[in-house]
View (cartoon, rainbow, N blue to C red):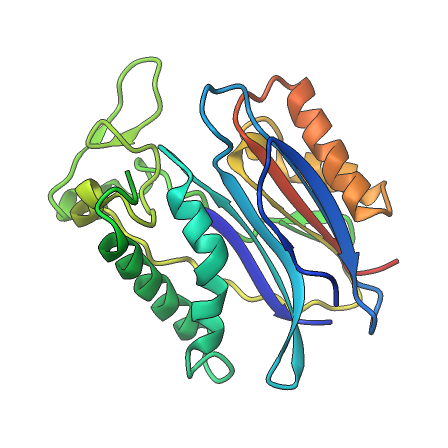
Length: 257
């Protein structure tokens, strides 16, 4: 569905958007946190479906780093909507500072309901001391078969194809997808991590990268390149060399110089 990270941290110009190929970077004025991003359209004959957010914002007297990649399917309307509204909905929730996990979950549900009612056509890794630590879990139909079947759906496993919900969708959680929503979840897995002195960097990427590269491979590549924008570009280049055909998007946040 998406990779999202928000943390109390430290400026940059607002960047977020998509094109057939784009990249950029930013940094904090208060501590040595830098980020870089790079996105490239895949080989499929449809518009780019990956959107991203990478920015630092001032909010209620604190500075927050907001980073996310939204990987769309069957169109770009939903990821474009998420880019514009998801973080805003999270930050507006009254429980954001006191119970951020609950706030994020509530905001996902609120955003999903807005998408479903907005238009009937809508919905049609962290490194510590060089060791990759997986921060999110792929929401695949086979791993959540029980939940899907409890909701009246089914998971198909056709030879030569990935598992799909009702023979259609290759993920088990999603925003939108109105025709399948009764069988799908949109709630997130939320995991917190302290950014301590041993934390090197954070990598967010779409499955155009993760389908062809392991967590540790990505960390090993990114750690060798101090400029996070160059690191993100190199990760895309490696994914392309490994014959990834999907849209590929990557954000690298470096916490130490």
